[in-house]
Image (cartoon, rainbow, N blue to C red; front, side):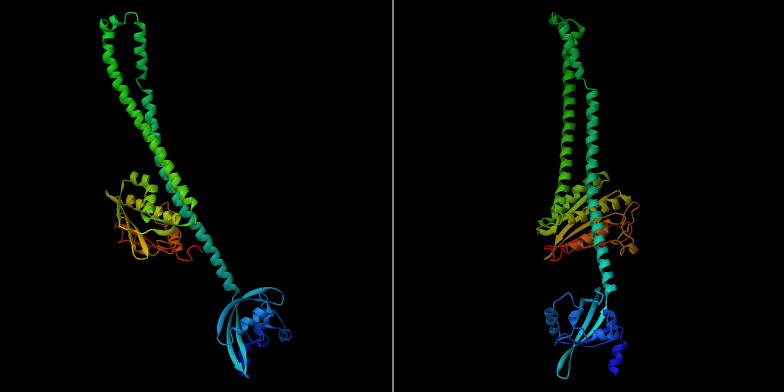
Length: 404
């Protein structure tokens, strides 16, 4: 009697099942869960609320619980055809020489829906962060292309100015004089004051035109080099875009140098000195190249901003590369503005930024990307005006679930 009272007082649905699937005992909470009357409950078998499996499958699963207790999550069907998520704690018990299963059912629909919503939001956040990271790379590409286009524009302006002030027209004037004195050319060149000055003038004109020609060729060469630079930058971006989601074996040094090239224009413009400290014999790693590039581009850009905002005369960006038995580490360190102690625990939070025009996606998306590859992104700073160092650690081989 006491056991029956305890069963009825439970808010969880309780059922005692025979291993053949018969419902031996149940409480009112379980009947309400399934939406049946007490009389109807006596006619049910376990497969009546486990409609996602056949009878044989249900019985086989029941027998698997005869010797050991277990807790499972599954789905039950109500009388009206609707279903709900349930957590079932199953314990085997011996009564009268027979084995019964004591089952406690807890409706976890709300919890599962909350989990599904969290997973959905997490996927959306990952997508938004990845897009933000890709935007960081695209922005760096555009900055570099913009810098190169400025150089091309300068060269084009120089060419236009030199051509407009060119002495090439003087050649036509000399030709006209010679044509005018074709009949007495010898006398003109030896006795006429203008004619006598003509050879010296031609020498000066030739030197001037040679110098002018060299300058024009130099500017054209610069334009060609800068056009090639633009093609390299765009080609590099296209290369990374093509391998989105693909794991490849790459050299960490090459990835770092690509990230530096994508920031090269800004680094030069802001007079930031780049120091490289690469260990020898760094092994290749298996990674998604675009994710690593996304992280490194963002870290280098942030370091450039930190150096520029510090007001230091010597702006130094240090890139370090090292390796252990199973991982490689890339550190991007600067001697810039540093990080306040109270911001250290928030630096990778979504939306957190200390820059006036920052969006707070860069470091957050970088940390997420590092985690997706089985790595970590950490930061160290000794405080304001003492710089900061961000370290990306990545495994030599990706974890099995890196792309799941």
